[in-house]
Image (cartoon, rainbow, N blue to C red; front, side, top):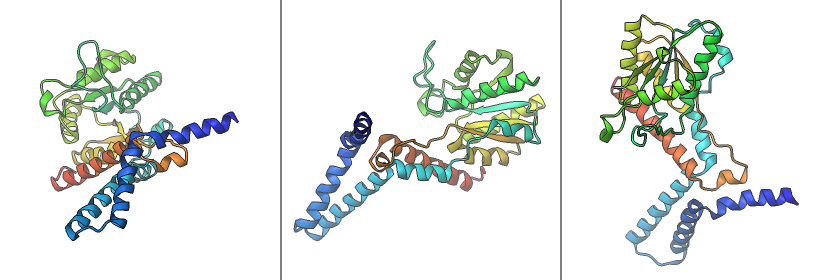
Length: 271
């Protein structure tokens, strides 16, 4: 009985969410109006267009749809055990891309982290794993500010503080705080690698971001091994995968944004 109640509680939650109510109610209402009311041609076309948009938004909000899009675009998360088989092993540098902390909300002692914090935790864990094997790679934290209103702040110093908090020695971290996007991450990282005489590096970023990052770094002629972390897949029980969810909508947006960024970079000759 307790198991049935538990399952029922998990099923009822999405039915009561604002996303479900806010989308299903107008969809049902518009469908009813189109079926029963006598509407003029333009009015009917507008109502039909609004219904189509709502249905598209409903589909984009489904975990089943967002998971399918994420699987189609994300790189597989990297197995650390496979790194020793790379021709670049042992790595001389670990390049971790920004996006894990907020330059807008971080202030003084308070460092606000985001959903891609695994980029930094993975970089720290990799450093410690390599150090135990007798290799101490340079960790390059690259990230300025992608917000036009906060160009006087940079993410890289905050990234360094988090890496040091996770036990990475200060002397092992080099920061690059001028880059505003993935292209500039690669451009300025290449300068650091060249100035330091380093050739074999590990590129750490989110699985969803890896396809574009990999292409940009390859375009710059940087020798690296990709290390993808931080999946955007959602783990939801079967019925809930077909009810709207705000996280699923955000994941769908993130896939569309990455695809748009990839296409834009291709057109600009950046990859």
